[in-house]
Length: 133
Image (cartoon, rainbow, N blue to C red; front, side, top):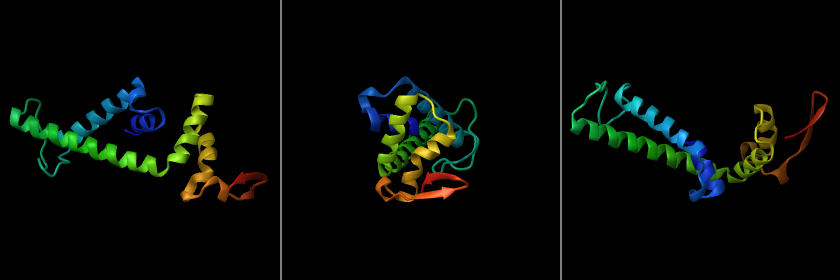
């Protein structure tokens, strides 16, 4: 869900890419598995749903899947809005370089760690090299 929400926040809802549809597909499959196979639904309970549930049971499964997806979307949106400055910095870096290693992402996001803003950063020496902390 994170990729889709990030694209909505960065580019707007009308400019979400097809890559975000892959996020939705994966999230939907996971939510269906959680409800149907793992019994992770308070409304349906701890049961495994067979391949051809009744239409009533299928409607309940669909409602629970939708509920999980909406809750995930809302949680991710709140989290990304809370860290929106860091999101924009990372998005700009990705637009410029197309790919970033985990280490490069950590360096880019380091000034935003623990809620600090770039103007509050300090330069410290760590094993012979200067880093922002």
